[in-house]
Structure formats: C-alpha cells, structure tokens
Length: 403
Image (cartoon, rainbow, N blue to C red; front, side, top):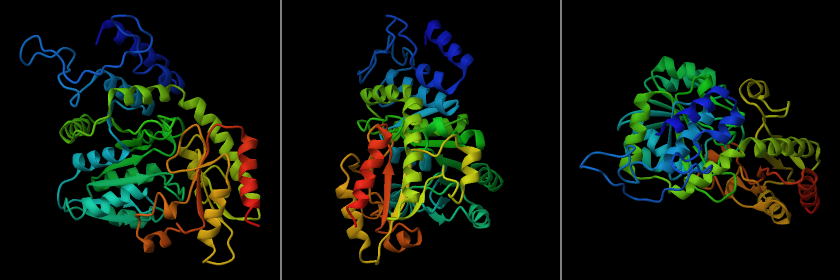
C-alpha cells in the first residue's frame, strides 16, 4: 500500500463518522493514476519478481485480490471492525464462521427464528455431515439461553429475526456467551451497519448477506464477516482461501459502490417503512404487524437501545376467517400488488413482498414453522425508496381486493 493510500486511510479514520466511512473507506484514489474510483483488478494471478516474493501480498485471486481487499476494508470500516473477510454469499460466510470456530462434536446455539437457508444448512449439513450439535433456542427466554450455552462453542444470533422481526438484546447474549466461553456471531443483514453495529455491544463476529442492503440493487450475491480478534480473522481468512467461496472482483466493486449510498437509501427506506407499518397496524384487513420501530412491538425498548431505526423489513399477518383461507388470501394479496414485486430477498432500492411459509422459509419443517407463527397468512415486505404514498396506495388496493 502506498504512502498516499495510508494517508487517505488515516484521513477517513480521523473524521470517523459513519457516512464518511461509507463513502471513503476502501475507496482511496489509485496511487499510480490518481483515479478517484479504484480500478477493478480482474487478474487471476500476480507476477512474482522472484519465487515467493509477492508484490503487495498478491499471488492468486482466490487467496487475495486488490478489489476484494478494498471491499473488505469498506465493510470493516462500516462495522467499526479491525478486519473484514468477504465471501461469495451470506451462506458461505455462515459456513466459514462455523468452520473457523467449531469442530466435530462441538455445540452451536442458534436462535430458533432464523433465516430458512441458515436453518437448512445447520440441520441438514452441519449436524449429519460435520457431526456437530445444534440447539435451536428461543432467545427471548434468557434462562434457556444460559443453559444451552454451557459448553457451546458458537452462538448464532439474528436480530431482528427473519421473518418475525423479534429483537434480542445483543449485550445480554454477549455476556452469556462470554461467560460460557463461546464465540458470539451476529447476522446483521436486516439492519446493516447504518442502523446497528453489534460489535459495539459485545459481539465477536458480525456477518452479512451483502446481497441485501449493502449491495442495495438486487444485482450482487455476496457475504461478509467482520471481527476485531486477529485469531478469528486468521481462521476466517484460512477458510476463505481453502473453501474458495470468494466473490468476483466485479461483484466486490459493485457492492462497494452500494455501500457509498447505504445511509441515504436506508434513511428513505426506514421513513417509508414507518409510514407503511402505521398504515398496516390501523387497517381492518390486517391481524397484526411486526416492525421494531412501532411502540407496539414486544421488544420495542430493546430496539430503541441498540438500533438507530426500525429497518426496511415489515412482517404482518392478514386477517383470515378460517385456517383454510390463509394461503388463498395471501396468494391473492401478493398477486394484486402492482408496485411491490413478489420476490425473495430484501434491502434493495425496489420494494419486494413475499410469503415466508412457501418461499424463504419453505425448507423449515412444518411443525417448526407453526411454533414460530410462520403461517400461511404471513407477509414479509422489504420497503424500498419509492414514493411513500405510492407504496401505501399499492398495499391499500391489494388489501381492498380481498374484500
């Protein structure tokens, strides 16, 4: 890294505010040409002046790449971390964290209301193939968490959860994990570093599906893990290289570009989500609404303490006359939407709507979905940056079509 790059990094650290870090961290002008936008390095291999002598630490793209290194500096700075490691997807980041912290026979404690893809990986691969034990626990029951964490190696937390948007006190779980000698990893995908920074509340690792709000435009699949512990970082870096689940340089460039506008996009999305959640809460066709920014949310006080906004995701349950009518009404509602796109994922500039029971969480066993209230009347919205009234009008007409 050139002296110019180092001086720019110090400048960004000096200002320190989130918005400044989002725009500048990892995006120092090119030291050779002065290009304000750092170039995309597509090279798969790098010349060595003599065997084993590396230029800038680069030898092979799977092991390291200048564009990926820039992206990793960006996500680390955004989360207030010392180290960032990027992967080809959020699922790959989860796998790397497990490989870096656990061995066969170890116990993982996971929040029960977790992303369906994470639950599928834990149930169908980690347990039967890697020989680990996974306890799915309701983190609202702190005593149950304390019992489960005894002897555990890794605690996996989502907050807010997917899809119920339950909020867990990170500081409390961090203290329990520390006392048990376990590593606490927090999936921060739903809020992102603009609205929540779990490391500041005691988390050891923070992960992201960068596909969501960090990329922000539904055109990149990527994951990341950040931490402050050099030992954990070294293990993550080892598994990044050995597993080979690395993002392409172009995807890194695209995601880093997304981070530059994260705060602006999140501000609008949260404003829209607040208005929409209030509209839904007052609508006669809606049974109940879950959004951490609403005073009616069961963990509203915790959210106020550790979040800087309610987020862009809203979950609500349609009012249905019978159990049998739930899936029919849910399908009808989603089909009637005109502006919201019926699709999985979240965090992008466009608004999306989905039915978790038959889409993102279809892989969760039916009996577990029932316990978690992931039923056929549940709808999950990812609120984008469109005109607020247009979004409300679209939801309104779709609800009216059910009458």
